[in-house]
Image 1: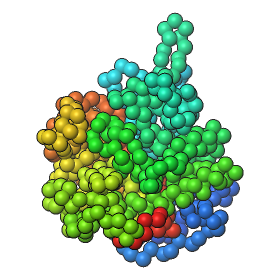
Image 2: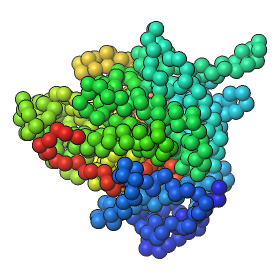
Image 3: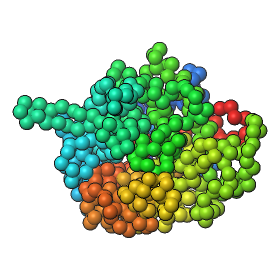
Image 4: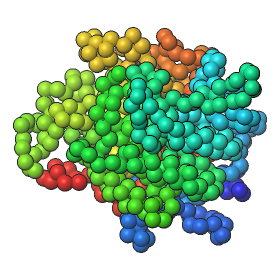
Length: 569
């Protein structure tokens, strides 16, 4: 696939992406003007990119022109609109050479990171099928969730074959019979991980999948299927190759995943009801119910599936169901999960025991349940999606992954995305500190820690999931920063990470309020810490990579309606 030169506006003038410039200049890019001129003509033999179809077009069959951005906030999002009309660059990013494509000498951390990432490759019958979780682990175990940043690194470096192999191998494992203690799981469940088993006698290799039967707490992963759909779309977008997604087995795999999460039942919310430990926070941490991470990934997977499903009889049935669910889910999340200073004050003044459709306090949240820390944490400018909403309960903690995915999937409106970035800048010490990036803030302590975690010795305060700092989150932050036109935030975070990561041997997480200490049980040479850093560097070097991981805003998606008197979605 031929590469595409991306023209970038620097300080009011246009400069070609292959022209040397330094990182200080890149930081000052006006992201609202990167693609002001129409994209260069593509190969006319190719079908129109499926990314161009909005939800309304899919549901009505008619193209609807997008309105012209009317504010500076919306202008910052024009970058992703244009990126989705272009295939991602086909050339390698330049990190295998002494100089990057901008002519800037690469950081010495980059070369070592690539060397370690390649050492982590896992082979099955001579083909790479994934990456091991950590290089200090002798078992060739590949975790679906952990492999995502590795897959993105290889895609952005022009090496898609390993991603294709991974997608097909996990797809085969999905078809296995899945039983835990004689109870059968849903047909569409994707494995949490798989191992390559070597028979020393016959010299044969087999794959062994784990669907939760070996996991801590025996919880099946809800997010594996969503990450699989995300990677399938990332592969298709990066390579321009639609043949993989169009394979009957891939189409069936998507439909099975969608059947699981779109099934109707007793739940009155469009969000997904989940157990504790079913996502990145894979231990008991009080994220049960409707955690933001799962809802944002659910939204992302549904939007990716819309772009990948064939427009046949079976596909169209799912398109209709997805479209309805997306509209309901976006309304619910943008309305009830969003908090800023105004919304905090509204909750503070809530009345309780309200009945009927006119209720304002729909979830019967008791104002006295508001935690003390949030009044000081909430800045005048800024906001975020809280961790959970369910009857009589709001989890006001900050969850990094869910908020970043909300930006990348356009679950967050442009205004909400900007507010999330404002929050990160305003609360830099709390959310970034000395090592990016807090997975959850704040930590839970004392009696609350005992009740919520079950006295979990790994999730003590400011450690691991309980307020620890995770370098893997760098790629998510960087992508969100580029999409919102704030690359300087990502650059600052990456520079912080570069002072420690190699010296500390790529730990999985850091401990302490500022992330100053290597995690007490952190694995070294953690692959997703390595890959997350590389993906962040490549996106900052070449912002057009953003199209691989982010989706444009759907102009027809209804904005949140404040204080609606109707409970109808």
